[in-house]
Image (cartoon, rainbow, N blue to C red; front, top):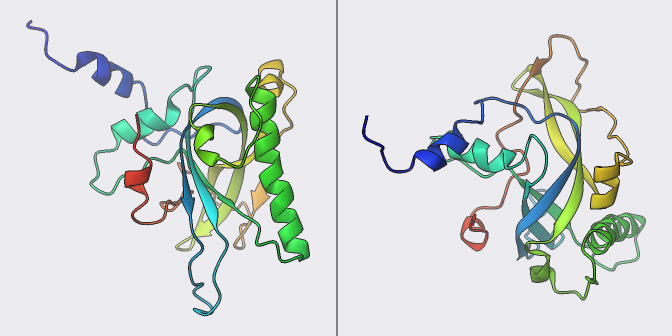
Length: 209
């Protein structure tokens, strides 16, 4: 048999089983790209501008689930496929509200985890420097209702240091139920189609390399 081109890449892609669900737990990840997204008018009130945010793209780089999101993406042949290793970090508005305080704390968790995971790195208000940095990410299971059906999927919950992941000391993410989820007849799924959705047009700013 004559060797065909692209076999090595195909072999890697074939390691992913379509529909495979990432187990809840902590993983050592690498940030692949970051893009700043200005706040947009809200659906409830077009006169109200939503929070600015950072769109972060990542993948697992250690353990048996390394390159999970890349393999998932490569195995998806649909035209509207999206790279699911991504999340939105909302930025504070500096308006002094309690919610704004929570937003600041949530953002600081990311900068703390990045500083603790990358020797010599200190957050200097340049999010572009996050690219190629290591970080620990903890995923948990969420139960929800989609089109009348109960499903369970895995989603990113919070960042931690890489050391905590490697030492097994990362805290576990508790099961989260929303949208009337009861647990009756739930089906294990890869997740809703808009899981960690990236705003339209952002794909070009976050090329997968």
